[in-house]
Amino acid sequence: MLLTPAELEVLGLSLKVAFWGVLCSLPVALALAYLLARADFPGKILLDGIVHLPLVLPPVVIGYLLLVLLGRNGPLGAWLAEHLGIVFAFRWTGAALAASVMGLPLAVRAMRQSIEAVDRRLEAAASTLGAPPLAVFASVTLPLILPGVLNGMLLSFARSLGEFGATITFVSNIPGETQTLPLAIYSLTQVPGGDAQALRLCVLAVALSLSALVVSEVLLRRARRRAHGA
Amino acid sequence: MKLEVSVGKRLGAFTLEAAFASDGGVTALFGRSGSGKTSVLNAIAGLLRPERGRIALDGEPLFDAAAGVDVAVHRRRIGYVFQEGRLLPHITVRQNLLYGRRFAHGDGAVSLEKVTELLGLASLLERRPHDLSGGEKQRVAIGRALLADPRLLLMDEPLAALDAPRKSEILYYIERLRDEVRVPIVYVSHSLDEVVRIADTIVVMSEGRALDSGPLNETMARMELRPYLGRFEGGAVIEAHVGEQDLEMGLARLDFAGGALYAPDVDALVGERVRVRIRARDVSLATVRPEAISMLNVLPGTLKALGEGAGASIDVQIDVAGTLLLARVTRKSVAALGLAPGRPVYALVKAVAIDRHSVGWA
Image 1 (cartoon, each protein chain N blue to C red):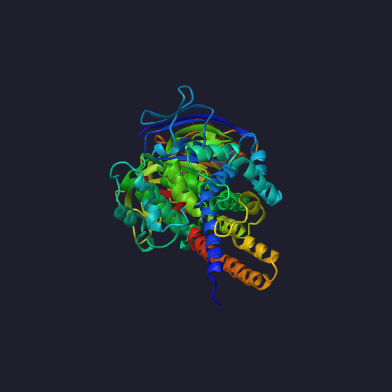
Image 2: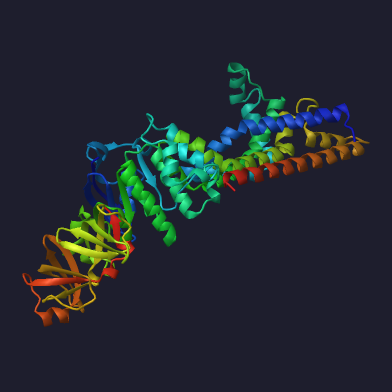
């Protein structure tokens, strides 16, 4: 089954949006996960709740909040456009941002669990061997949580591929710019005679998600084996 | 090397209050489980912050509550061999061994080759911790700590998780460490066998307190510490050197200040110095020199002190030409023989009662 140029464009855009969304949210997710797993501070429950909001709020709410905050006339959006030249509104970068926000709770949850599972006595052992805190993190903590980090990135990636509500609200449905796979399917179902094409994209979506899951499972197993030294 | 420890901290149900000093060699922290031994070790390593007190190594404070000094763990250069090994699971044995190397300043006292040879690790280097047996893990953990070039080595019951043959194997390696690498060691244990075999100094701990500390042979003979040094296994420790090895009979003559002691299967050469624990329960007393008995060791001495207690048995301290022995006898015998301080007595010890767990190199 060969893809038409239009379908290829949709596929490429979806992958680009998901890839950059996950990559840019990785440091944020890891930092939040570490903070929630290790630190004790006032307002921790509140922060935990805020991180989880995208999981329970209607996506359209997230999309609308992003629009208000980061749209061309939004307080943050206007500042970013003026001082850094970064524009999210109606751009693929906005779609990536929406995807990463929606994927964040999944990524943080997976990473936090793996950080909580780390045997802290191993970190203590490393520090008695002369390793400063950052070196302990890089040489002990990070390798041990790698499976969890990968898992979090995968979940976030899969979530990004399926992101619809926040994306369409925030950056609209612009072919070639913000029209990812779910948005393209939605558009096709809105026009007469688009059913066959919509179905083709649905098959593509299934294939894409399935291969992402399989690849990640293989990576995860490999990383787990390494982390446990078996 | 001079280690000074004086720390205090509330820890849940009890208060840690420990003070002792060590001039090198092997210092044993001895006491029952839960007596605070590991907490003291953690405080020295910097893994536990005391509320008050001072810890200094060679005069340099590592912790001083009054002066606000608390050197970070990774800057203390104190090696730590944990009870459970704690090898990093995601890297090989070789990488584990060399882990501390990149943080160590200078070239260090020992090389990977030396440590590999000393601890018999050559065949393990490319393996992962997962595939190692308990004894192998502990050897790697000891090697890893050594290679980080520590000024002091802490060992927290490194034999606890091992079976008897592995225990004696690792003890042998620790003895080599003490004698060949000459790294000062603080060794936590609740086993008198281990302490007698390797320690020079003993710190007796109970319920968070360091009751007493001093040279092993002096402290072991102290009457007031008897309840804490093991009713069953406890006894005096004497230093001796091997005067003769009768290979035909399998007996060694161990000469010490108070005379000679015969013991079987002593794993040492003539002239070597050994340390022998004589359990109090293995020592009998007589007021006249007995004849025609199988006991090879008949040591004349003077009764120095009688223990207290209302039970059936009583501890007795005997001075054998300056060396103190302990005997556990019944109160009935004390009364029947009219034992009292100052009386000349003969201490009788069966040679076979001195087993290989009771003898260590001094």
